Every structure is written in C-alpha cells, then in structure tokens.
Length: 133
Image (cartoon, helix red, strand yellow):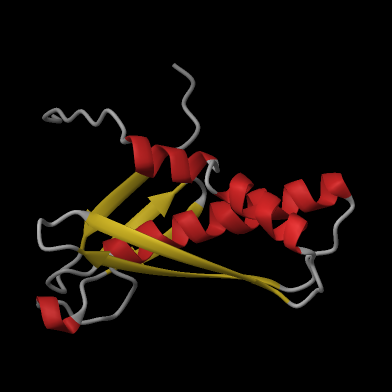
C-alpha cells in the first residue's frame, strides 16, 4: 500500500480540545458547545466537510485549467445532515463568478461526483485500530 498522509491527535487539559498534527501542519479540534465542547476549533465533522470542499475545489481547478476554462473565484458550499436512520448526507453547491455554459457546468458536476475524497467518503474505507505501547 502507498501511504499518502498521516495525522496524530493529542489531548489537552481543556475537555474536548485536541491538537492535531497532519502532515507538517498543526490544527486544533473541539466539539461544538451544544455537544459539550468549548467551540474553540472546528469539530471533527467540520474537518470532514472541509476535506471534501478542499478536494472539490482543487480537483475542479485542475480540470478547468487543463480545459482552458476560467473558473474565476470558485466557491463550494457544503452542508451535512443525518437522516432519521442516522445516515450521513452531504449536499454540495458549486459557484463560479465566471459565465460558464450549461455544458461546462454539466461536466464539472460529473467530475465533482468522482473526486478522490468524494469516492473515499461514498465508498467507505477500511479502518483498522490497534493498541499502542
């Protein structure tokens, strides 16, 4: 297998606030106040949406550049909800400040349905755990 990323999370003395080291970047995470956190940093599902939003924007920018299309200022708005059975639903709305044709939008929506993070989230991942020393 080819490893493409790493992340480590370390607790703090502030209830749910944790420090994350992802790749060579440092981030924090906390839970929303409604879930008992302090709301001092994005919650795990915020990062879940952010990773999908980032992959969406990067993938579409790469595709548009290859096609010679000007996306201008591109924005993806994502919303996460749970249905009555607890299944996660993510809705993504795409915006560009450039006048793209219906055909271009159709193609961008086809591409966005198959970004690497979209596929991983849609198809699932094999997640294993073990006890450390």
